[in-house]
Length: 165
Image (cartoon, rainbow, N blue to C red; front, side, top):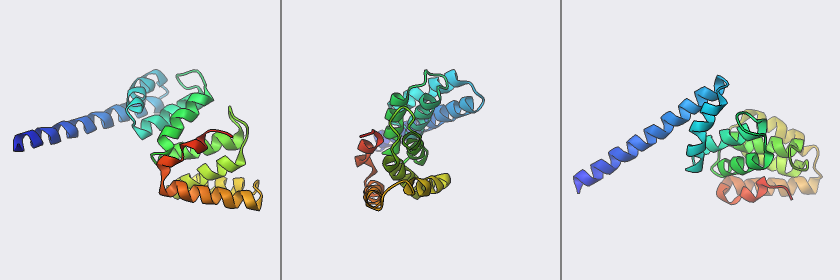
């Protein structure tokens, strides 16, 4: 039994290290503009639920880096990462909704995502959240604040707010 447990721990440690290495290789490739290599490393990780890889893949779709620009796919990947509390994904959802990129501009949704991202440590989200707040009625602002509070407590329930309408 001890040997089985030890082998399981070793396997899990190796698997985690392999994922981290694949992510780091993808991130380095992205930084140097080698988008095909970044995509090759991010996509399998994203498909397995790796939040940072999902966030980066969503960003790549929003910019058309190594893929055809597609805001629908961007929102899909970003929302998967956002409900795992990835602040960059949450911030990028705020940008998409606040600027109406591939969706109707929606300051209410932008406020929610910027608020959550700011609470998770994304510094520039606080500024963007405050700007979005100036574009909401007091009633809408109060509702958006309430939703953002709920999402911070239970992020996995908030994917619905990634989509417009």
